[in-house]
Amino acid sequence: MNLKIIIIFSLLLLIRYIIKDKRKENKNKRLFYSSNEIPQLKILDKNWRIIAQECNKLTLLHMKNLYHNKEIFNYDIILDEKLVLDSINLCPITINILKSIPNILYAGYSILKSNSEIYKLSLRNTITYHLGLNISTQDPSYVNIHNLKMSDKTGKSFMFDSTYNYSEINTSVFDNARLVIIFKKSNMISYIQ
Image 1 (tube, rainbow, N blue to C red):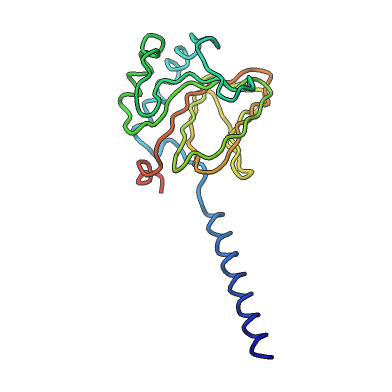
Image 2: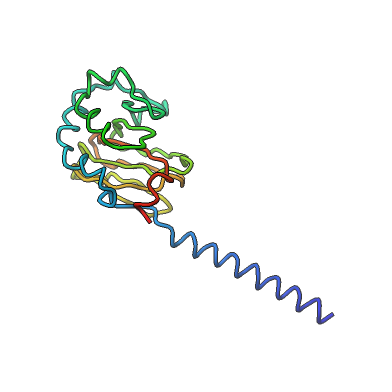
């Protein structure tokens, strides 16, 4: 009888240890990164005004609404690692800048409509780069992963681990524009450890 109790108690302790260790592991994972960690991305930060000007020329007629909820509109520049031909005439400078950056899976402009929140499922083994192009200064616009938030700001960039489910929130009465680039995590790992 005592041996059974000891075995059960030992198993419970082992399970508790494993769960606690997993919680620690998840807590220590970095979810947000500075784009300064990747030298190739500095060209985007330096040229954000030009990129914003090209984005501002686009209308919602150029963009597509992927979520059919009228809260976010995207204009693809690079899709599945290939240049979208329609974008050549509308954003040539942005394209030239993007060509200097290796390993882009996706790049495009994204307009998050005012007072909106969208939930996105994780993108397997990816890192997403956000560059604020026209972000309201009055109310926050941010990315939320596991209740950790990173605010979008005009002319500022950050990256996040899009391997996790995340949401994008715009509490402003204004639409917010950003350049979004998605990379394979394996291509970025040497920079972001």
